[in-house]
Amino acid sequence: QVQVVESGGGLVQAGGSLRLSCAVSGSPFSLNVMGWYRQRPGKQRELVAAILADGKTNYGDSVKGRFTISRGNTNNTVYLQMSSLKPEDTAGYYCAADPLASIYSASRLLDYWGQGTQVTVSS
Image (cartoon, helix red, strand yellow):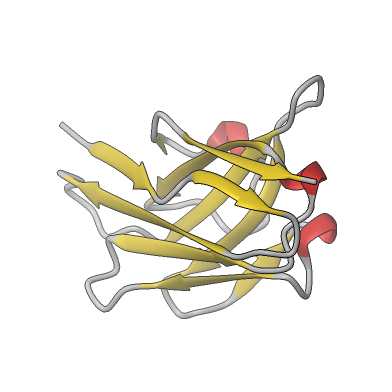
C-alpha cells in the first residue's frame, strides 16, 4: 500500500521561509513525477511545483522565483523550499507522485496523494 506523508507546514510571518517535506513509501514502481499542489481558501487547486526524476521542473506562475522544488537521493522524497512567503500563499499543501505522469500532467492524473499540510502566512 502506497503512503504519502507530508510535513513541515506551520505558521510563518510574511517574508519568512518554510520547507516542506514529502516521503512516499510502498510504490512498486519508481516515481517519475513528484510535486506539490495547493488549495487556497475559496480557490481551486493549483500547481505549486513539479519535478521529474531527471531534475526537470515546472513551477506555477504565482511561486516562480520564490519557491524551489528538489528531490532526495532515493527519489522517493521531495522537498519544497518556500521563501518570501506572502499571505496569499496560505493554503493546504499536498504532495503528489506518479510513476508515469509528466510535470505538465493535470493533477487529476496523478495516482498518489498525501493528506496535506497547512501553511499559514500572517501579515
